Image (cartoon, rainbow, N blue to C red):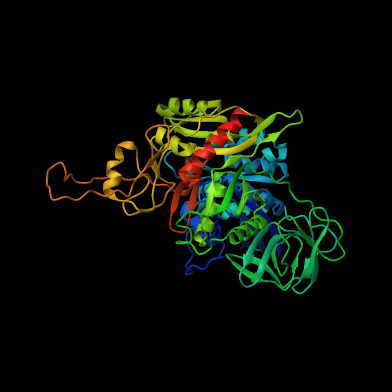
Length: 609
């Protein structure tokens, strides 16, 4: 059967997973009466809840007499490690762009990788049914983007389709016709994307996606570069330097057939398949016949820019809500995650029962913590810290990100001021239609930690921020951290409504009446810059005397809701986030007030030295 391998590239929420749904339906891969969830490729709970693709996944569609392997790539730069590997498997790319928003940073990030690898893109302008769609302007922006990314003449001569994945049609013009469904897109893929290049020689395949299956063990997916493979054949695994990792027998050869995986009797060069039965093979390893000596070249991965310390939860409430609480369990789970996710780096820490996890950004690390939390883990994590580098001259360098913010014109002054305080440089400002402005900054990563919430406040929820790693630049100096102190509980027990009501003039609370607290736990935000220890367990003194002033009704202001990402960006260096399957609590690193004072004196002495 003829083969085509393509990847779908798009920014978050531009509709690529919906497009895959329509391709599956209109190609007959899904029966008319088959019950399929919307956004079928978003297979895990977190992807469904957040509406973003986190893991790269493959599917397969048969159109006429050609099998098209489609790879759905993540739409967020924090999961870029998935993208860089995936492009090894394909020969073409569908660049999907929203007809109103135009190309955004994530589109730029993945397209630059695809163009460098020589892939010829097909541009699809999606959502032309939006009332604010501007397909012609967006097409010009895409051409300018490709030119800025050094695309060659062949890549700049890209074919274009317009349509709406939600309504299930594509056409050569924004006006239609709308009655041909996805047929124009299928035909364009067959015409424009080259068949996979097949090399001569014995079986070789580069591992690209790794997953665990409870029945088959480890499954490695990749594209076969040369030769063929059958179940029960002996193979060996080489790392990127050519060292032997293991030798073993292939227990199953699986291929995507629609949304299902089917076992094959034989798979040949050019096809994307999954191999089970090799317990040590992982991403970037070459699985090959016994006679092969040299590994296949693996794509280099961009380095991590942020790190966090994952520690055992040692609070007084430890072990009351989770089932996996020991340091060994946390360590094994993190090492298992690092095997499959090449953008993560896990190292042992000097502290007891803690590991340092480095990744691409707050979102990637936040998703890892959220996944572990749902698996029953209890742990405490530190504030994200930026990974610095030094150049040959010994100068300190820090990671810089390109930040694109779309917002209403009236809010641009506040945003520019806040970001300039965070040492960001304004690179470009241009109107984006409908009374909105697009601002482009180069900002240090450490200045952006915790900025998302501030932006939403400053723009009354209308600002949209997109970030992309730009490069390393000289250190920009001190950046002002959180300006407010916190309210710290002095005792252990259950918070009392009367005590919280009396403390309201000290600052907004983060807990509700009845919440379990302990000494050293953060229960609210102080209105001033210093930390304040408060007693949230103090009940009302009961007497026989009744007066109107004594019997005031206790009306509490709703507390600040701390979701995981907000908590991680809120805490300072001397604080931790305690994460359990049921709760997210903020606490001081040292729970004892005397230990805290000692640590502050020690830090001041170190700074003075």
